[in-house]
Figure 1 (cartoon, rainbow, N blue to C red):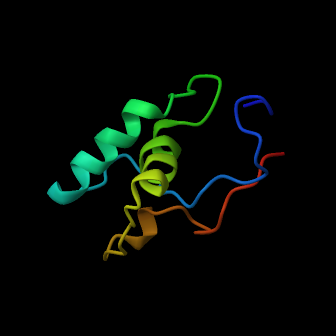
Figure 2: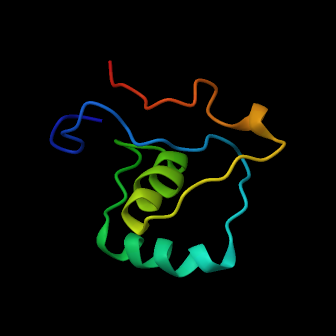
Figure 3: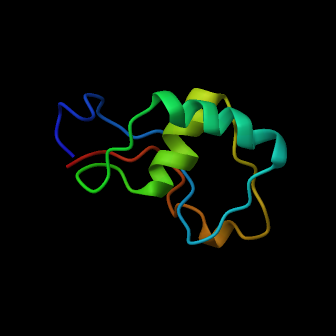
Amino acid sequence: MDYEQWPWQKLPHFILGSVYLISGCAIFPLLAASQVTPYLYPNGAPEDVYITGILAEIANVTARSTSFDRYKNINNKKQSFS
């Protein structure tokens, strides 16, 4: 992802995994955020970053920890670009 697509130095917190559950009350805010937020992949952020990071931040939706913490982003910190 180049600077024009993502001018910030770090990605928002996101959940990494092949499956994540989304509460029914979070669906409409995420959908509304997706209508005004372009999806940058394949040249940009993968869908985990887009849905659980970028859209969640715009929609003010927060992730909650579960017993499946081992499947979350390992360092659980904001990611930096190299």
